[in-house]
Length: 208
Image (cartoon, rainbow, N blue to C red; front, side, top):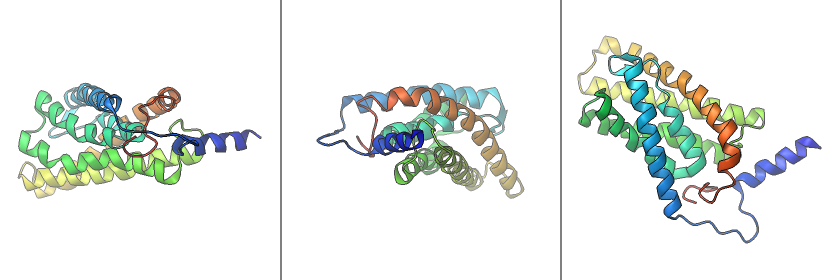
């Protein structure tokens, strides 16, 4: 009986109820701005706390990117590439041209989790093993492989690292993002998702 209840709850998270109409509005813009601000704080802290050259050994900012996209769709996706630009400027971890070149990787680190949860019907509250797999595999592992691959390639393109350092930087970037972001992301999803999914700003689709 309990399994059936969970299944119905999961289905209702992303499906519109009869007669329900959801539209983008000021609230979504506010949440995008809020996540940008939170991301700046978390990202800057991670960049300053445990720096390893152009990467950080503990960067929980990717959790803000992934969770933002899960809760707020493309609004979270926009925040996911905006806040690192500001964070990098504050921490001095990357010059502006490099931060701008990071945008595709940061966008991927955000929207992949949101895409996976909507595509596979995973619940942001992490109620079942499927939900945990969706977040861990898509939101953390896949997202950070792409992000670390893109970011380390950008550094190599700008001649900020040597060819010999490319692979170590990639692994350092991946581990530094993945471990910290999995911990923070799980906490956010488990304890805050029950509140967020009841709000008008929660995006069942990508924009509303």
